[in-house]
Amino acid sequence: MSQPIKFATLLVLIAIPILEIGLLIRAGQALGFWWLALIVIATAIVGSMVIRRIGVSVLQKMFAEAERGRPGLEPIFPADWPRPIWLNVGRVAVEKNIEAFVELDLPGTKVVVGDGPAKADLEGRYPGVKFTGAMFGQDLARAFADADVFVFPSWTDTFGLVILEAMATGTPVAAYPAHGPIDIIPGSGAGAIDEDLKTACLACLNLDRKAVRAYAEGFSWRASAEEFVRNLQPQPEAEKVRFWRRLRRLTRLRKRAAAA
Image (cartoon, rainbow, N blue to C red; front, side, top):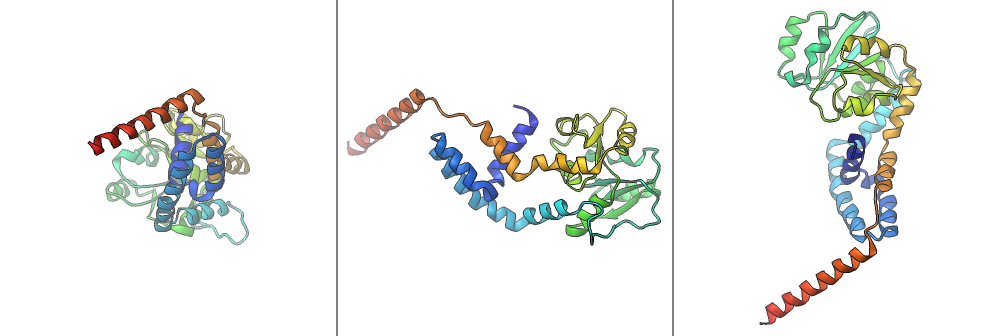
């Protein structure tokens, strides 16, 4: 199973039932998966608690609305910062390989949004890079939207959800051909990957932001839920019969043992 399919499955089991519970229950009933309907309901209850705690649905809406040029959305980066703006967002730590980004010889301004144990060291050694610290909510959405290119230098992230967050605002993504980016970016028209990160960055300057946003919409809650449903297969009838026969036999044996 490919990485995108695995991710779609994970989204369904954790969060999608909150928005697509009707779709999944109907699919489960149609395929004879009554247990799926029960799992969906239970997951929805737990998932709704998680959503209320971290505000994922609210943040998703912010990113979806934060396309550059949207009326009323003010740029967040100062006008005197030279363009293009190269952005990285995330925990500033060694495993994120941020140094590979900040040491690139690129025109314009490099910006790192986030905090972490490596921030003080990098900030001291790269004075030309703008370290803004952590951003949240609308400010974070504006940062994604106001950048020209999002740079993802990590070799170790398993997927890199931040890639989709950037794309949702129309900002193309430059990355190494690592797991995560290599499953999302190639052939998308929404970014570029290359062993030479600078080459990938410069290639992103020629991409259409509207096409980037359109590609990101393919990873919506509904699209992920439908992808999950397409991968469901009904249990063969004979196997279902054997399963319930074994279950009834086990129930009888337990009753006899209890009576004895």
